[in-house]
Length: 385
Image (tube, rainbow, N blue to C red; front, top):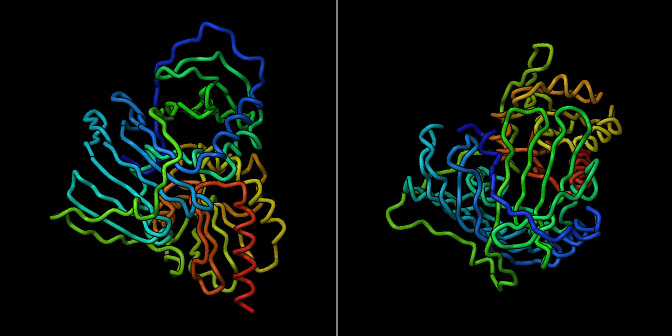
């Protein structure tokens, strides 16, 4: 299974129409009610199902629990379950447990009999690939549904439905209007406004929609960080995590340019580098890249170089880049570099100081991502003086 496939999860869950008409609220009011409900959630546990036996993207089920401390990078998380076997897609069964205690990540592979642990940002992110089948960031984000409320180009209410016995309002959101735009659909419980199902797809793409469902939701658990620490089971092999990241030197990787040349980023000492990892089918990337493009224009000629590093691609990244008239450089086939920097899926971003050392990384999106990058650039420039 490729990394790009692992970055997506699918569920085509059956829903039953509700007989009564939908409330007279518009889509934004429904989303705002959901955001308010999610904002009050500090600790949550739920069962999840993602994918299905006939879906090439994968099929998994299990249980997740998480508690927000200050922001997602400091949150506590546990996802345990089974990636089910799909022989027709050459996928073997994997029983796993993944956890984060705010500082370190842990992965127990019960099928392989192995255990791994590493700090977040220096190997820990690479252990999370299985966990994305059950991890829903919306449950613990400080500003939940920020992408939907601030960046969707359109939103509309669909027919209400029942999901696993819960009456839900259904909101469809579109990001972008051109071919290849992304669609998000949320099924939001009417009594508590919490998500019960999510689905994501790209218009015009042959890839199936991806998403997941959650049930048996409970909140308010008094967990501590110690509840999210995993230990190696007796007899399990302890495997090292060989990944770079914050505090390490940028790996020596040659990346292709659209004109067939190559660039060695590890040789660009003297400038601060900002590496924005993205691809054409990532709707969060579509949301975040314009801010990075604006920042690149602002810092042009000021000792900071920006690169859009394309990863795990299935479309035409060069045409996409040119259509949007982004002026900072695009680099292709950056999968190896992303993995080496502990950014195993997108969006991801890294800042490298003038000595070639990685000083900041972030995996995933957030509304304050651009501000964090600015702070990292300022710190790197100050250190070089």
